[in-house]
Length: 113
Length: 113
Image (cartoon, rainbow over all chains, first blue to last red; front, side, top):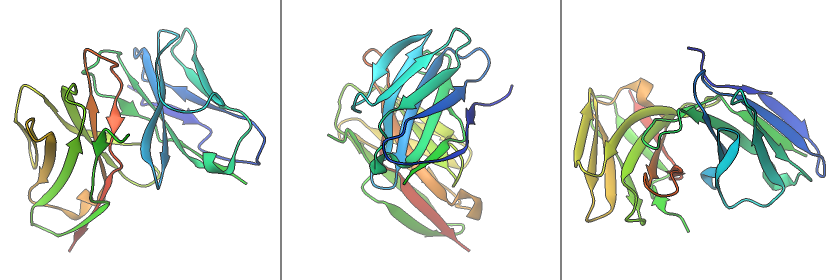
């Protein structure tokens, strides 16, 4: 099976712009979770989508949003970018069962200037 | 509020010796715990997990111990190898509850030859 893919791998934006990141889960997986990784905060949960519905949400401002399509592909959007949004954004897919391991993609590294 | 804590940001171990990575949690509702390993520029990779009904799970060189009364888990790697050098994240989930993975901040393990 192909693994989780994320595009783009690297992105440079300026403050105030918006960005959309894409994640394609492992075939057959219906759950996609998004995480932000920064050196100071570690891995922080953003949100989880299951069957096109947001099932869980972390403590991030409304500038961070996402959606999931009928083929389980997911997009994450960040509007009005701030310098502190520079991070590695990871998505992970699973079947959606709670005990299922999440399989991570390689991440998108976002740099906000 | 950090529900999962890895208090050691880094750990250095001699090749062939035992590596012990520690993780503490505060939410007594967590009932499933996982360890992930992460190399630079890659997403985290699942390593080993343990259910709260067990106190030990072993897989080759990797053993995870869970002490529920102390809300503490540890990952033992024996013997440590240079390829084990990576960042290790512990994660916890409340299966009947929010069903979202909560990660610790990570511990950077360096294996010295």
